[in-house]
Amino acid sequence: MNNKTLTIIKPKALSDNCAGKILSTINANGFRIQAMRMMRLTRPQAEAFYSVHKDRPFFHDLVEFMTSGPIIAAILEKENAVEEYRKLIGSTNPDEAADETIRAMCGTNIQMNAVHGSDSDENAEQEANFFFSYAERF
Ligand code: CMP
Image 1 (cartoon, rainbow, N blue to C red):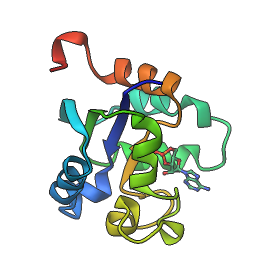
Image 2: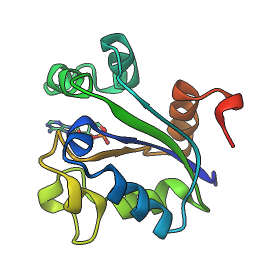
Image 3: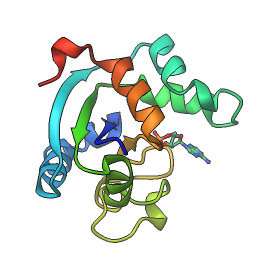
């Protein structure tokens, strides 16, 4: 079991001024922020990050959206972090996300669903390495 996961606070959640609420919810639920950066993804970066979805019909729109404004990327630490964070963020579609989850609180629709969370320990490792060098982890 790994103890870290990678999250992205997506552009719409930032423009909705929801980032503070998301970060305080993350901390209140026992996650430690090991690394964090606010940045705007380039198209090649967004395409690379979401390359697993490249053949899906929503890929083009997803890349457009993820490059439309700044994001906050962070590595979160907690025991069983991937599973615990997926519980905290709720279903991919905010309309189906349980009350009190981050996507229910700050999501707009299935694309603008407030946050990304790694879906496996292997992907958490890859995604953390995508955004952060070891010198940027504390
Ligand atoms: P995320 O956790 O960032 O990982 C992949 C993203 O693709 C997902 O959140 C959604 O934002 C998006 N996504 C997944 N399924 C759909 C869909 N059916 N239509 C549009 N976007 C989707």
